[in-house]
Length: 111
Image 1 (cartoon, helix red, strand yellow):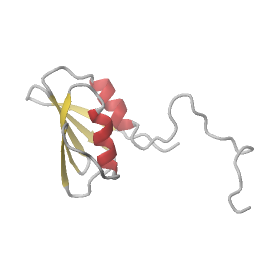
Image 2 (tube, helix red, strand yellow; image 1 turned 135 degrees about the vertical axis):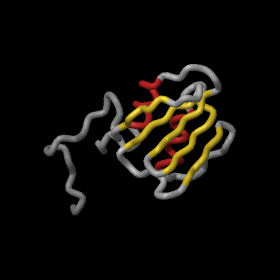
Image 3 (spheres, one colour; image 1 turned 90 degrees about the vertical axis):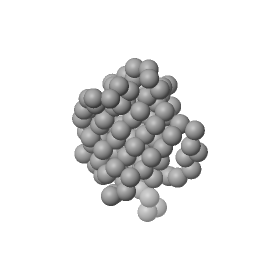
Image 4 (cartoon, one colour; image 1 turned 180 degrees about the vertical axis):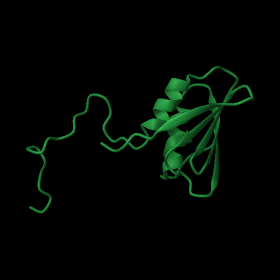
């Protein structure tokens, strides 16, 4: 359930920097920066995305501005496919193996 985010990867001229453009505004007009040693306590989409990206080994920094995401690695090569999948799945509520209820199974919330 939910909609996947469309993600476009753009190579950076700097080694260890990964840039992504998405079809959703994640921060409004604000810049948000996260470091691997930061405690992320918020519940905004950018906070949740940062938590998910930091679960990928080698991610040490994240910068978000509107629909642009920049990921910094610790110098190791990161999997662009894994980064894209993590970003794309941000607004999905059912993961692999979970099924969406059919019309017959849905419960009327007014009763």
